[in-house]
Length: 340
Ligand code: DAH
Image (cartoon, rainbow, N blue to C red; front, side, top):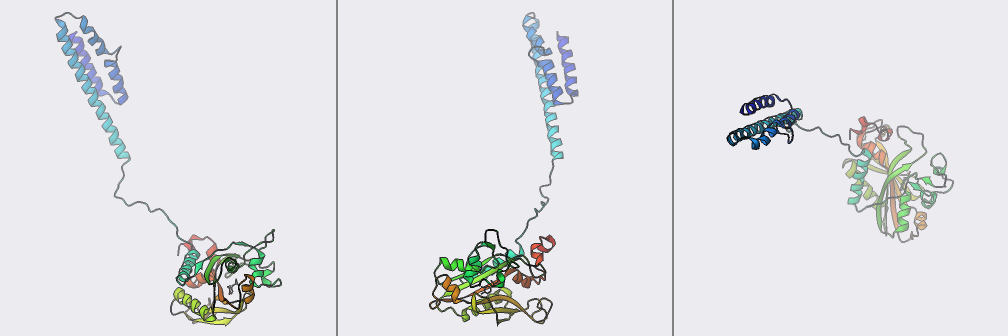
């Protein structure tokens, strides 16, 4: 019996040391310690049948061997587990001190940037920001603005008419009417937004473009106020050195009407292709709100007066950045957009 135990011990130790995986170790455990067929289990179970003389000696030896084998199995098991962690650590190692990969992120479209700047300047002069619908009623886009039926702007060539009789607004001026209908003077608003015209597209015309409308109404609001506000805007937006001039211009919803020109910001007034050699560019059409428009919104033209303006935001942005083709803003070309 003693000999048999020693042989088991030797073989088992050898097998344990040669095991190549956790699975093999598990099988060895079952081979020696399995509850029914384990080699050592069987011997330990038989100890009670031994003679009184043999029992303590064999019992002691069997228990020692049992402990030794269990320890060896445990040791080997730990070795395997550590090796496994080593492999994972090697395979999945990362250098936490290495700088990360910068996720690409976009920025606001140049027109949006310019719009926000315009809003900031006018807000600082007490103007609120108003909005109106892009799909507009004929009344707001034309009639209420004193644009008679025979006006060229109403022709199919200029306006996108919808089947239901509505249209895509051709300018932001209808927002003037919508605001005045809802509110009492005094008021100061600007209304930035998209406009649409059935245009032949070229370097300075797009079918979709952006305008900013402005309106100031109150008792005694005069041409002096118009000039003060618009010249302040120009100087703050384009720079102190920018000069302005006011020329007569015709728009049905103002009387008198003007064009506010500024010295070309691309050439500084010397003359270039952007200003067509004149040194000046038209930037803000404007005027004193026509009495008929005031009457249309039930204001009394004898009591209140005001001025309005409507500038092309695209044009303003083009002047600001020296861009000579409006189509670049709407082409979605990242080589262009990434420059802003
Ligand atoms: N709505 C005009 C257009 O799109 C621009 C304009 C001119 C707006 C004079 C105004 C104004 O408010 O007073 O051509």
